Length: 118
Image 1: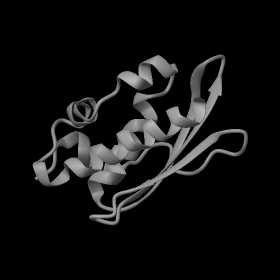
Image 2: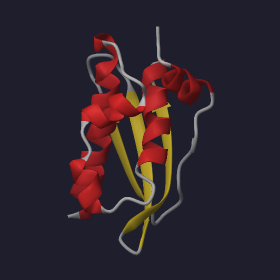
Image 3: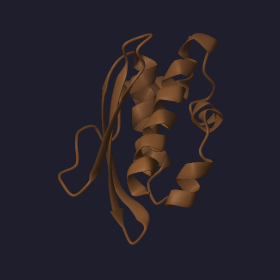
Image 4: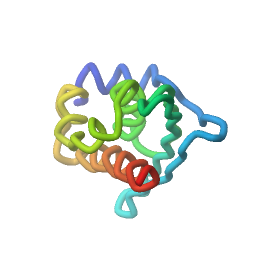
């Protein structure tokens, strides 16, 4: 059974879509389960001003994408570097072991954004 937070983000996902250029867009995938996450981020004044996501995957992957768009809004690169899988898991009210791959996918997307910013 999933937490109320996972169910909320799955049933009512926030910020679905893709941001137009010049937003940063990254695509990450989990080859083991087939989940794919596209994260779009628009920077303004060194902070994340707008985010959007698209997911092809399980309910938890959708919830992770939705949560990330809210969680990282207003963050700078230093804040992003500090994010860990456990932060995603905690903000979703906990995840069963078989769903942790979705949190890892979210952090992989953040790492991909940071690589582009370097």
